[in-house]
Amino acid sequence: MQEKNALCEQFSIRFTEALGSSGLRQKDLAEHTNIREQTLSRYKTGERIPDTYELYRIAIALGVSIDWLLGINSPTDSSTSPLAPTAREAKLTEKLAIATAGLEAILAQLKKQ
Image 1 (cartoon, rainbow, N blue to C red):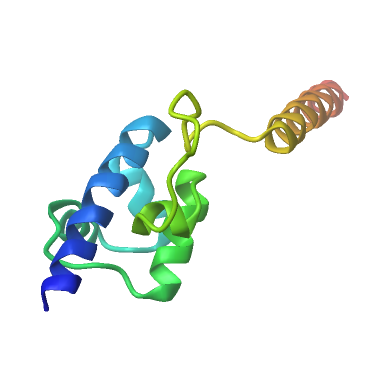
Image 2: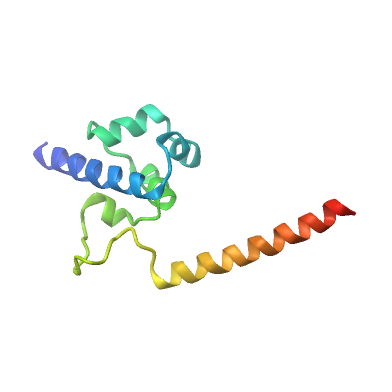
């Protein structure tokens, strides 16, 4: 039981940190993950820990790893934040932004017609 309490506490700390860094409100996260706000509040306070599927959805929505959320790994270099995007993620984000801008331009042209 003591291990579960420690895991809940570790998850609560990291979940709160990741949520704050993500810029999402708890309500937004609830909508993105299809997890009730009340349940997310319990995770945030350390009362409960998510099941595997909820943990997966939370990690994806917040852009962090499941390992990091559970406290299994930590950065070896203290200057590196686990919330910072990897080089690959940064490139993909840049490409997505370019593609989105292109699609928005096309939509604007179609609306004019």
